[in-house]
Structure formats: C-alpha cells, structure tokens
Image 1 (tube, rainbow, N blue to C red):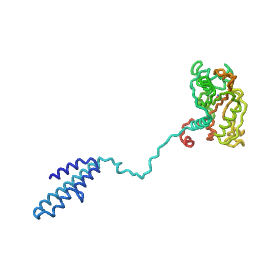
Image 2: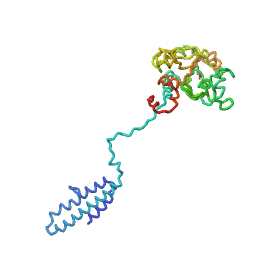
Image 3: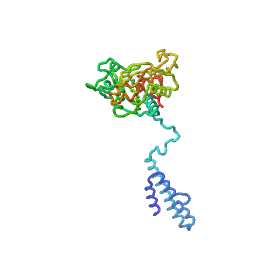
Image 4: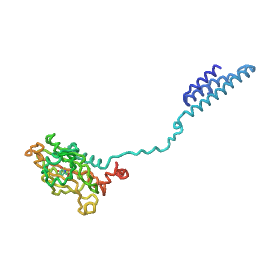
Length: 333
Ligand code: DAH
C-alpha cells in the first residue's frame, strides 16, 4: 500500500507531460518499474501466497495505470496546442519591411559623393529671417529677383525659407575658411502642386570657401559629381543669374532618357538641368564677415526630387509625395 500512496503522490505531482512520462517509467517501466518489479517476484512465492499477492499487485498495477491515464488527460488539456501541433516545415509568414524613400536615397548618395571630397554636413532652421533668406544673400529690397521665390511669411521679417542658401550665410558666420559644407533640407514656396512643382521640397546646398578658389574648382567638382552620380556623362554649363553668385551658371547633364538625341523628357534639347551654381558674390562674403580680398568661394543648389525624377525616370514628381507603396517598392533597396 505504501507504494500505492507514493505512486499517487508522484502522479499528482507531475506538472507536465514530460514529467508524467518519467513517473510512468519509474512505476511501470518494463525493466525497473517499481510495480513491474513486484510482479516479477510473484513466481518465487509459495503457491498459496502467490494467489493473494498476485491479486493485490495486479490491482495496484491497474490502479496506477488508471491514475497515470487520468493525469495524462488533465495535462494534455492544459498544454498549449501549439507546442505539439506546430508544423515546423510550414513557410514563415512574410513580414512587410519599410524602405527608404527615393528622395532620401538620392540625398544620401549625393552626401556620400561630397563626403568623399571632404565636405561635411551643415543644417539650418526652416523658419528663417528675411535677412538670412534674402538680404544677406544680396537680394536688393523689393527687387524683382525676390519674385522668383513665392515666399510664405510667418510674421513680419520671418518666413519659411525658400531655399537652403541661408545655411551658407550661417555657416560662414560660424566657421572660418577653409569651408566645405553640404546642406540638405526642406524649403517652402507658395506654389501649387503640379507635375514639376511642390509647395515643400528638398534642396541640397553646397559651399566651398578658401584662398585661391576659382570657377575651375566649381566646374571640376560638379563635373566629378555628375559623373559619379549618373555614370560617365556629358555636362555643360550655361550662364545664369542668382543674386548671391557672380558669375552664375546652371549645369546640365546629357538627357538620361534619350542619351542626348532629344526626347519629350528633355523637350528635344538632349540636356537636363540639374543645378544652379556660381562664384560666391563678394557682397555675400562681406555680409558674413569674411575678407573678400583674401577669400573666394563657389556654391551650388539642387533639388533631389528633380534628380530622383531623372534617376528613376519619373514622369510626375507628385508620385514622390503620394506615399503609394507600389511605386516606393519599385525604387526601394
Ligand atoms: N538657391 C537657388 C534656388 O533655390 C539655387 C542656387 C543657385 C543655390 C546657385 C546656390 C547657387 O548656392 O550658387 O533656386
């Protein structure tokens, strides 16, 4: 009977199916189970005792077997199905992974090219003063040049910057030459959304100031940039006008769609404009407190959305702002 009580306690104490299996072997195992051993002794007993003992041991065996089965049923009900039912050969559930936006990809690629040339990244505020956005950059008050920028004013003298050029001024005020900075950021204009305009868009500004810097440096660096970004390509510089540079030039690369033969994308010219640039105007250097007799510099500004449009052959820039993942997934990497 002692074995019977111990067996009941052990069965009740088994807290999971594996533990119960161990208890079952200890009691009924064919080799050394406690109850099995008792059954093995029976043949050695005198025939009269054998019958009585046999009845008791067999009853014990049956009782233990039933208790084990009961506990097994209890534990099976409690055990989570997944633990035993999971089909490990089934393919995993696909996870939807996000990816970088094409404009971010373009900005990062441009940053890398200029970082390799020793440029560092500079940032400035999006809410800017009129002085940084216009006056210090040699926009004469009420000059028509200001009409190029449809400005969103926040309050008297404070506006949403219309370009990243004010970061040039902030950088020159806080750093002595030699200066080599790249400044990506968002800019704002009172524009309607159409195939090539948006009221908010990214720009990247570049600025290099040192002794003996000339237009040759501007051309060399920007040509190097175009060749690295677009792959070996033809470039050309066209005279242009910006109040903060003199002389000023716009840079074109051979149309990436038609390879220069002329198509709808390049309006038949074979060229695509990618940036504005020029030698920093001496008045701009002066406004920043930099000696314009000793130092010269060049600068450029470009729009990553426009570059992304060329790079990914996008007919309408609005798709860049639509957040349609079917488009974004095509470009993602
Ligand atoms: N800020 C000009 C724009 O928004 C772009 C630009 C042109 C920037 C020439 C420059 C530059 O730094 O030198 O249209």
